[in-house]
Length: 76
Image 1 (spheres, rainbow, N blue to C red):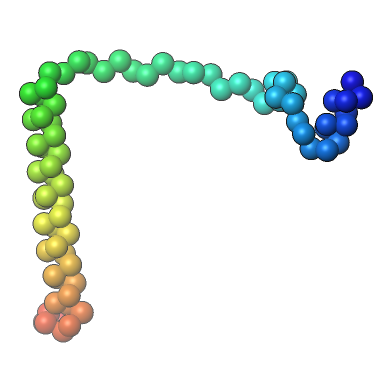
Image 2 (cartoon, helix red, strand yellow):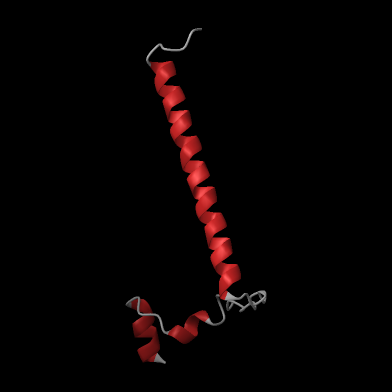
């Protein structure tokens, strides 16, 4: 016991000491996802790529509008 006290005073904490202090993290099971075939996954990937391209185009368009506005091209 004196050895444990010495370790405690030196800041060396044993793993078993936190069992009573810190509650253990409980594992939660992941939701089971339906199995998908390769063609379905590839189609979903293409949809995601198309969405990313749409967002990039909108971002570019907004950047051009801001540039026009900041450079005084817009009538106001």
